[in-house]
Image 1 (cartoon, helix red, strand yellow):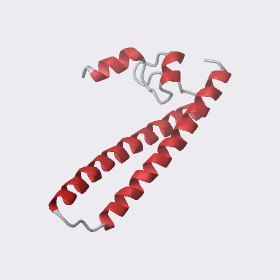
Image 2 (image 1 turned 90 degrees about the vertical axis):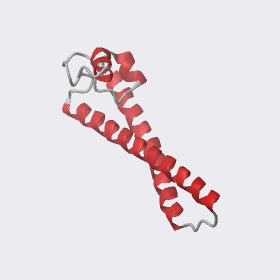
Image 3 (image 1 turned 60 degrees about the horizontal axis):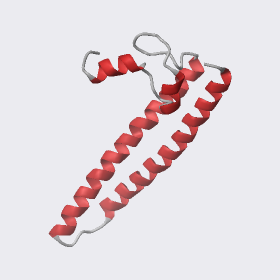
Image 4 (image 1 turned 60 degrees about the vertical axis):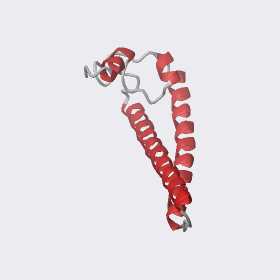
Length: 117
């Protein structure tokens, strides 16, 4: 991976971090304001609960992605970005371009998803 590739991937991670952080903040604000709203009937209450649960799941997913992006940026700073955290092999540039926060090579990711890790 060239220095230019690293710069491009860092910019991609930072851009993604900014976007996801803004979305997470919006979901957190919505969750906070939802708790303050009064609900008048059973249907509204049920709908409100479903929306709140969805917002909470989305916010949790966004927070997880923020943590992964932060981890990738730390790995860049430490000089081990682009190396598989499991086997130590290089993560292909195409994979990092598609998913800059990737920490596992394709083989190790497949093993993890199949429960072999």
